[in-house]
Length: 358
Image (cartoon, rainbow, N blue to C red; front, side, top):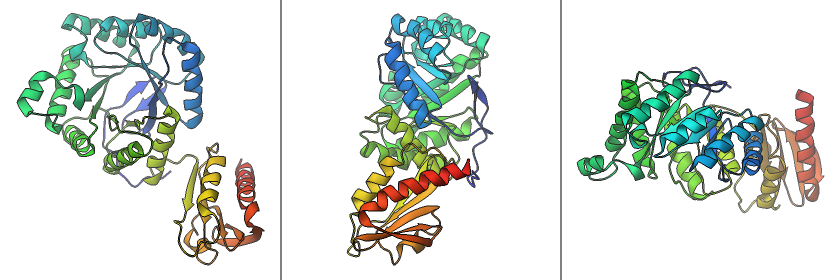
């Protein structure tokens, strides 16, 4: 869809067949919470993530068994896979061997320069990107001593320190993330880095929280960054089913008119004029239309007087009265129905509308 927000011009890299960076769409990422060593369970979750629209999946690689399991996972999915590696460069080498599409490592903590060079050689042969993932909770000791606590400046300095290690090895297939659990710290870190570098950025709020609090913090932080054109890939980190991360990510992108996928539900707040169970009706409609991937604006309004007009931009919707409701399309009333029929009628009409577009 048309996007009036100018994107920061970043370098373009490839993650499998997916292009990342300026000129490409903001890609949605999540991370499996399964045991990577259990390839069947991990593949099952990856398929659910793909159905929700996930375009990049990160896998935890805590040991050699997990790294070797990537080969079987790779055979079962075409989605780009990123191996999350900490401390042991041998795990990175094995993940590359097993067909991973990219690595998430911090070069400064996987061993000496010779070990980093081994990983770079393996990635260079396949042009695999390396994401440098800086987290406020694990900054280097000397930076904490210098800045006193994880400031945006400390986070950015850490990122450039890791970048220099790769650049000294003449490797620039790099993506960077600079996360903190604090929204303002995260936003300022990304702003500072974006002014100084054109490496593509993966954005997110670290340890954001539950589906409620985490969605709010991520929406605020990522919304600010995306509205300023910052961000090439994104993950909404939630203490929840990873599928929810993908759904929230698309809702954020849709609200900024950056990308459109699935149903955009418009529903009015409850008030004294409402004479139907608008809360239950809106929740039921949202749940029953969750499988829709085509972009569509659907309204569930509680007032037949103002509802159709207030939701005039919706493709289709319902507006309730006392025990009854109206089906309307593009603000024009089509037919009256009993309250108990409204959800079924709306879901059926939406599915018919989608069929007619194909």
